[in-house]
Image (cartoon, rainbow over all chains, first blue to last red; front, top):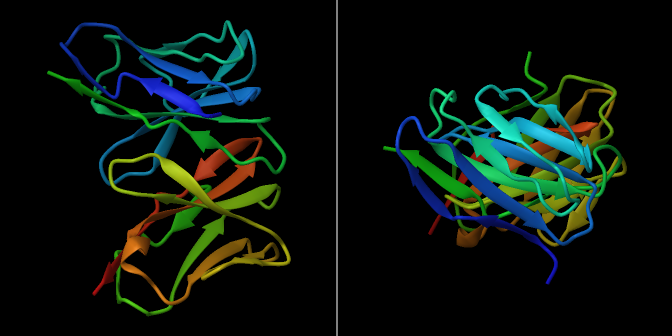
Length: 114
Length: 107
């Protein structure tokens, strides 16, 4: 089945630690995205990538980093510089970043900083 | 001004009711439009794309008014299973999400 997988589903982190969230897609999509969602809030864009080896900052990139070495993979690192990292993190992909194509989402990772 | 604005609700309606959600977007260059559904603690899932001519999928009807920069979603004969948050999404090289409208369908 084609889709997007994220791991882990739940992640607990101590303050001061960096953690990396995995996102893999087998939809052959060019564009991939990371969003953050806080309770009762909308989605906020962290980073996006339109093509391999290229990515752009979204609205709330501070304290996060990404890489796009392969078309199917777009891992997100939450660094210790992120002041309030506890949130629900969603990865998405689309055929391209413009046009009529919709986004498909992975099941998300819930990160809790202890 | 936010790119996409929605009434957060909640909309509390009885089973069988008809309910309508509205959404406005700020940039007239927006290219494509969608409604997503998000259940509690789950990822958003595409409900339907929204076309200029309007489109229908069973009990759901979506409309787009480009002149007024306005999108709507109509749900007829509401079911308990329709309870969720409905996200209005606009694509203009990036995807812009509204903060969602919560729907509670009561027995």
